[in-house]
Amino acid sequence: MSVVRIWAGRRRAPRAGRLAAPSPGRVRARPEVSKPAPEPAIDTGAVQAAAEEFLQLFHSENPGPIEARIAAVRREIDLTGTYWHTAEELVFGARVAWRNNARCIGRLYWQSLQVRDLRTVSTAGEVAEHCFDHLRVAHNGGKIRPMISVFAPETPARPAPRIWSEQLIRYAGYEQPDGRIIGDPRYRAFTTELLHRGWRPPGSPGDFDVLPLVVETVDDGVRMFELPGSAVHEVSLAHPELPWFADLGLRWHAVPVISNNRLIIGGVSYPAAPFNGWYMGTEIGARNLGDTDRYALVPEIAERMGLDTSNETTLWRDRALVELNRAVLHSFRSSGVSITDHHTESRRFLIHLEREERAGRTCPADWTWIVPPLSGSQTPVFHRYYDSEDQLPNFVTDPDATRRGLHGNPPAFG
Image (cartoon, rainbow, N blue to C red; front, side, top):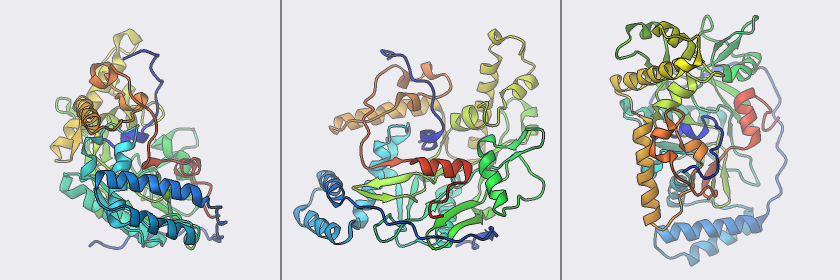
């Protein structure tokens, strides 16, 4: 039920025709003055149209009287420029956003998404505390629960909180004087910015130092919060047949909570709505640990395996990558942590596709994201076309959120 696969990274498209815990610690940040954000211009007509379209969808799948609800929403939008979803509408909207996301292969269980309604939470400290609760509850002793925490929405009267971090748990990347990177190179610039803001890593820099959670609000400005140990569950990686693999000291966190995507439901925007499924093994083995611009472990594993790396025709990269992915799946399962493999998940996606078609709905899917990054042509999702038209509700990433998640700037309200 991979959710993280949605944002793991794009590949080249196919040719045409190819078928109650302790409070979080606060990290001292450099002083900065928070400035009120300018009030955005509101197109109430567009909000009303989006609201009515969503309400029609909600009532088509949850039969009941609709006229009075639409009239009430119109009045609320006329008065305030926005409206407040009922609890039932919020749950439905969040689940359908997952159902509609064209980049996610793990949508078969969209109806099981647990929705935490935290729309009255708006301060940076409260947002961080609830994010840590999310990690604890979603972990569920290793039986990962698909979950979303929806914080305050964007309104004409008050900007919503922002979570800078791409995921609630990310590993630091430290640039060394000789140009080497200790840790995750993807977060080199982000780590540098947080160090500049006053974050201090635990002891000597390591390959898997958990970065603080960065939350920004219009009142509190930018704040950093150390993740408590009770919220960070990690799996140490070993191989079922290669004893030396454990000596590499590799590990990865158990719960992949995407945290800087915007949830859009019926004209209402929720910029802070962290959510998770569970990992598909290739997200960790083929991408996070295998990509050349991430941990780039394939050459070292190939060398330790004694493979002939002198020529690409030996396919040493492929052989090493398979064993890296085997280690990830073996380790998570041995630790009792939910994970899935790309062959199983591909078959599940086609089941989801068939169910959507029987329900009379189109199922948007982006081929370049749905096809796994390992043995793609050996999975059934490779050999077909998909409808790629975007649908709402959905999760989106805006350019500013992307820059903040990778570079630590610009502040939303600076």
